[in-house]
Image (cartoon, rainbow over all chains, first blue to last red; front, side, top):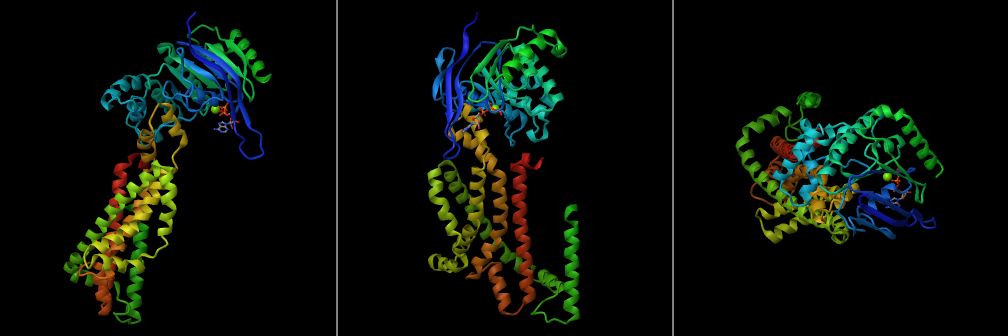
Length: 256
Length: 247
Ligand SMILES: Nc1ncnc2c1ncn2[C@@H]1O[C@H](COP(=O)(O)OP(=O)(O)OP(=O)(O)O)[C@@H](O)[C@H]1O
Ligand SMILES: [Mg+2]
């Protein structure tokens, strides 16, 4: 069995009360999880339970009250710049073209524009975005924007991708299209991914393993391994294995 | 151009009514000249108007550029340091309550009857909208974009360069447009207080000689110049922010 690549160890996070006299906001209550190299792991949980908070802590944007984050054996708690983080919104810079948005990561780390373009071009092709390389984000559809944001995340060239509900805001059709697409891309590159969703089917369809979080304050309610072989097709959503996993996950979620 | 057609037609209609009123009531030219009188004065005095106009353009343009420079430096300082902003910002707002017309004569005492006092007046008038709009633009940045770049390992300066500053451009250009139209007016105010050349002094002289048609001709030139400044800013904006205009 491969070594754990990312280890989240017993994280606690409480926010101060929003107003005086209110209770403080216990958000994460001892969350532990692990992701192996090349694994696609999802976190699923009710809205507001603390999923994004966990990602903010892993990415170093926030510090936990207690607990630590280890990447490849090194303690990176509170350190920024180690992982690629795709936030819940696509956050494309409206004044940059698609191509220039994609190269943000390399650019921040001192790679020359020319070199960064050279890195981005084949990926744009791969992501079906080459025709839009010089368009501005405002001219793109929701699905395309999400692909650009994802390309930017990939091009930041970190070993671990955190994806926070990348398809949460898309319509059902575009969403399933994007899931197929991501599944294909992932099978090809085998990036290490930690993925947030509150869509059970999405979690099963994409992941090797799924952590189910409880309501706030969040703890890991269940850890479910998805052993449906890849490549998975959309038709399998109604298969027995799939439905069984779905039931298991829903009961863990709703029992929360 | 098409979208301005209704405005232009309405303006022409107003001119026609004005012309008719002046003719019908036989209003004396020094009280209210007819548009045709103003027009012929524009043509007859075009060399003189151009000569004075050039001086005003020069002062307004120089003052406008200096105001942009000062505004940039100050708002970037305020955008980078909350401490600087807390100190300077309230004082800047208070400074705007000082009536410039009242203190402008002082500039003549300080600098003499040269170009400097006019340029300073322009700077003082243009500076505030420019700085305010840029400071506002810098502070209304999308915090999540800042978080994204921070998570990617960007330094505060990189966050400023790549997110805050470009994001503030639409607001900055809105302020620039206001200032561009004010700049010509600022130069005129400066010239009123004493000058040997410029549209402002030309207006004062025309008024004193009851040559109201000349005064109106000068006003027309001032309007055209202000529109020209506005257009230059608008075109620059389209070049600098193509993304903003392509929506
Ligand atoms: N910076 C903060 N300060 C105070 N409270 C916060 C902060 N960030 C998040 N919270 C609170 O912590 C709780 C968890 O928020 P979080 O964004 O992690 O939820 P989530 O699981 O990602 O929800 P969703 O599925 O809706 O995105 C919420 O109640 C939220 O209001
Ligand atoms: Mg969230």
